[in-house]
Length: 331
Ligand code: HEM
Image (cartoon, rainbow, N blue to C red; front, side, top):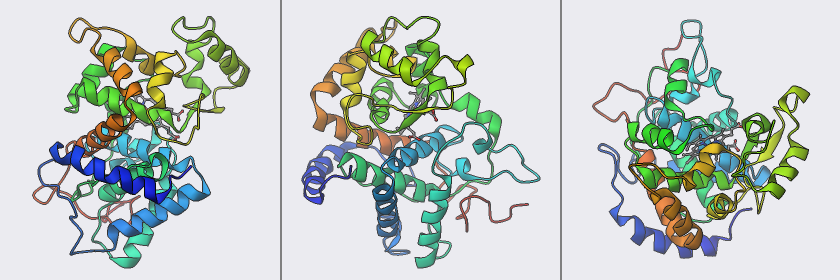
């Protein structure tokens, strides 16, 4: 459910102070389009808000799209490219994600006010930020100035995107390859407080025996929704957060981790220890559960940091696409 504007504004003041120390990727800046397309950010925000009003699950779709874009050859909108004759295996042919049509609609609205000025990589970054405003009730500046890339390669998805079966050390290693640390991992995992998953990502923890780290009552209820895979239930949708409002981005995720009520091994393993980090991530889970406002500031900062991964800016090869699903010279 969207948060009342007054609450968003109250949090904005806090966020501005909290984010003053957040580092920005080289080449990105706040308000990159203020003179070249002053309506850009408002246009994205209005369209995104309308979409979330129509379907409250859409905020999660945009946030996940942004994560997947940034973790595979950087935040360059490579995730949005459709397959072509010359490149039939783009990123989007691998893992099904929601929201591609919606991003194309946002781009069309932006093109209607400023043609060929605002990149799809920035539109996705703004849409993710605006989803957080609408679904989480906190606001922050998302730096912009990204260019769109020319390439999208399916195989890179499996190298870049972490598996929900990963243990803590594998997650830490995966995030480290993107320049993100243990705190970024814990803080960004809070995105699993909203949105949807599919039973096939959960059933390995339910059958043949229930993962002992999962709360037994929670597991019993989940089994009623997600039958064993051989019974064909793999593609049933379930909410990431089965404890409170599944469309609200919040620090509820950390309460769910602490009580064994999360879906993935990769969520629950944040309570584990590694030889290098000890129980650091578990302590962060406890701290984020206890401090919702601090988590919001950390989440905003980590989204900005993630949004700076391997970006293409003015001196790099890149373009502003006319449409998000194809490069300007697509064949
Ligand atoms: C830490 C490693 C992560 C793993 C292993 C992971 C894995 C997954 C999986 C398996 C799903 C369900 C997909 C489906 O059934 O379609 C999912 C959903 C989601 N993930 Fe993650 N994820 C991770 C990190 C992140 C991060 C960093 C973010 C964003 C900051 C994020 C945001 C989301 C959102 C919002 C959804 C719901 C998407 C929807 O409703 O369509 N995840 N994740």
